[in-house]
Picture 1 (cartoon, rainbow, N blue to C red):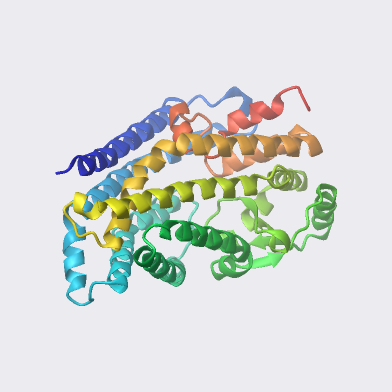
Picture 2 (cartoon, rainbow, N blue to C red):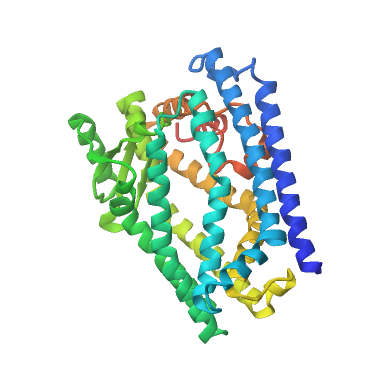
Length: 412
């Protein structure tokens, strides 16, 4: 075994070990405080709700540990056992060239997804159903899977053909073209997702509450936000979890509220949530995330160019086919991204604090505090997370920390 291959195998196993350790810490933290909720939440969260949140966290961590171990086993199996025989099998039917390279990547993606599908079924129809969240019917689950697969094939097969074609005919500069194409696809998806892709999975209807809509439009005008509309998503057909978001660029921007959120929150809380989302717009967080994605993609394509140039497939005793090299590179990138998650989460949490502060500057702290408390309670989010786990896995600050920041004297 080569040194590089040994490092990749070690990184995969070490990343899995770190994940198991962090999830065990989160489970212990929730269990340890199961009978002692934070005093500042005593009036808003009952003891039974706090216990259910702890039990949900423990159950989710147990499932997540299983996912981590299975993911690591599948990743190692691809590199050590399955990728070579798969290539040999496909090569019996497809001549070496672009189509064989694309077939390798597509087949690996499909088989990999099918191997992980049972865990998704357990999560949806086991864990989420057990705690009263799931409303997805098996037929709906299968239809969503089929739609997702069709969209993946539609977008990524042409991208793979273009990538491998460029790598063959412009070996020195193909990665720059690949980076540009990937960024173009990212920006295009940002524009077309709200109006084209999202409606394939959920129904979006204009907000009908006239009084609430009037207050929202007043807030939008005050913030200089031009929206493509205020919409309600039928999230309750799949889950009782609540959320809100805005997406898109320019005239394609949409503000979306889950119907589950509108049913459980007061008008003032909903407006505070909207102000929070507008805070992301005012502070340019969407642009910042796109620039961050561009940075990761640029580094990723540069690393992939090096992998192609050095023949990464041969390092693992496999053919130096572009499809095989891409699969190896993506597999090796997973533990690197895991180690970088504290940085990306730090940037995300900083953005959330800024958006909370913006909402507070408009409506004061109370509506936002109440909204965060209800969202945490209704989604059974633990109020006593492990700090190290949160560092790696929380893109949003834990509710107690967000509320403490809102409660600070300045800007109250």
